[in-house]
Image (cartoon, rainbow, N blue to C red; front, side, top):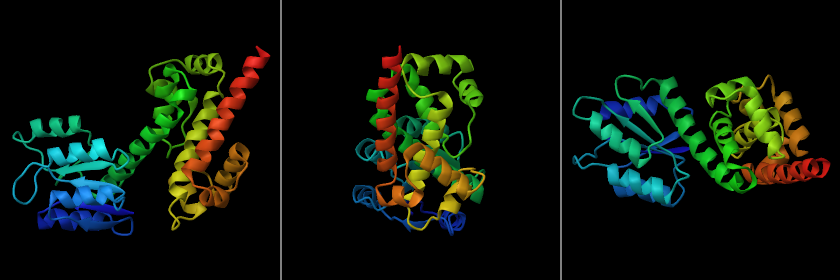
Length: 264
């Protein structure tokens, strides 16, 4: 993955380079227009940007443009925090930055990598939710979004219910009333969509993806993929990754709905 970065001071550049060593290639930009070009040509998986460029000009308009024109590209704000910049942070949040990393506070290797992964997960979740909204009622969308944004963890139905401030039975009833799969099945589908996105990177092995997503083993992930989609990881990779699993999920949503309606 390539990270496009508009970070101008040498110390921040060094920290960013070190934090992502072995994880991503960093392409440092001198001008804001270069960031837009990277996003426009699909050359950066994530954009990291400071509040101001080398000349002191605000990057807010550029961030807003990237988030509106290229919503699939996550943007992480990497900046120092002070009484003078706190109001600016709010403006960048409203402009749509996916995550915030504070310079000299939490820009350690783990924190920065987590921020980049979270930003990517949120953008991917947004795209998938848009693809599925027509097939699920509005009261199911929050569950779908939460499971996709947290697809790297082995969530339980109880955890999801608690995060959404509802009872476990409420989720069961919502999905049942909509003639959709069970909550546990939907959680599994979201994990598989996350796995499929990671498998789109040809450099990742099945075992690496399984480890990133907290599966007990590569075999456990293979078995889940086969059970839900009928395909092996290699076949999912060869047939479009996320698009392939999305197609299987859409078919399942339609089939389960028709079966439950026929039985009711």
